[in-house]
Image 1 (cartoon, rainbow, N blue to C red):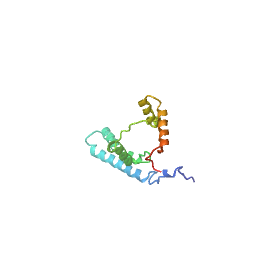
Image 2: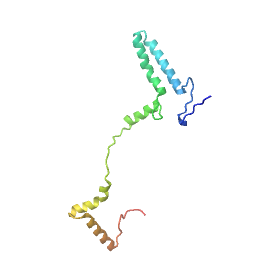
Image 3: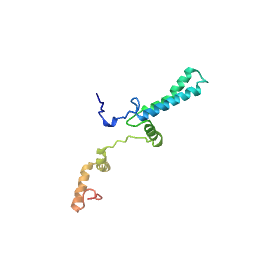
Image 4: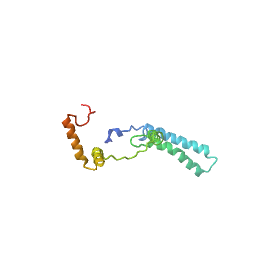
Length: 144
């Protein structure tokens, strides 16, 4: 006697009828009922071939809903997630790069452009003068 064990416990499905779980059974029955309804409802007005194709087209969405899984979501959850992401809360994502070197050196470069000299040397002189006067260096609004 051999017992099948899933490698992942979350993939376990309890089979109800012929290896199908409850969800698959219900949607399979719905697909059959829709196909039978289309066959008897439309069969008199169009030919056999067209009726067969209409039965397939009518039953296919119900059959697919029972067996559809995408990233752990069933068909209804996937449809709701798609509607929310594409229609209800659409976002346009725009890439904006951030140059960390430029943001760190922005003040020094501005000083250099303003005085047409070496911004680093000017900044060091200002910091030395501030240290001699007894002023705090660095950010004065920072929390300790």
